[in-house]
Length: 257
Image (cartoon, rainbow, N blue to C red; front, side, top):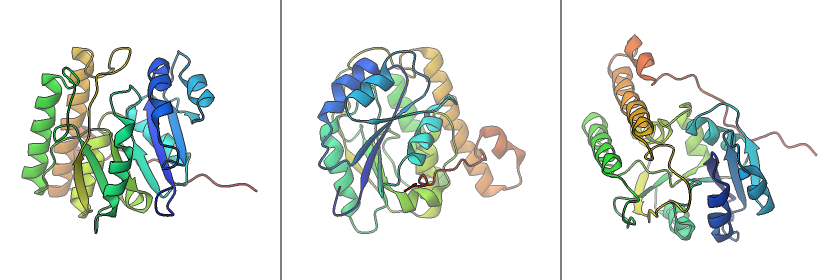
């Protein structure tokens, strides 16, 4: 709990059992009330490892990074939601700084920037760095908001998240949040976070050219689609680019006595 506000850490995973065992014990449970591991169809022991180490594991059968995040949101009623990658590349020791940044006046969303922080050698590939820089520049040109990164490590107040009507089921999730925050005038701050090399396994995105291509296509497609929707709301191209993905429910679960 942070200043009498409940905090949930939501971590989407796919076959990350070995990495979960490495980072989950490092989470400060005096700060984080719930750790929710949103499993996206793992064939390893990700769910069992998460539960054994005290996390709540929920299953999302619909594949996609955003789908897993949405499932995690729906599983908790926490007032502050923190998102982190499950491959061990985000440093749990940065959790306090990310949450505390919400104390800044008017801030509703905190984005952990791997660009402003330290990155282990090889933790960010040249393709990732280029894609980040290009997308952030497009957001600046289209909406006048400066970002340095689209990293997964972030914290947002639930009430603010609900106004964003998040819907992207895949790798457009992080850019959707940042674009919608810019469109709605949400108070956003970036803080430096560390990016580590993943503990085990290969990244589903940067670990191969196809994954990098598909993620880049989805992210840039969302940006152009959102821009078209702003300028030409009736344009079918906005739907084509994925900026009009139907919204999925992210409300807190019903509590039964």
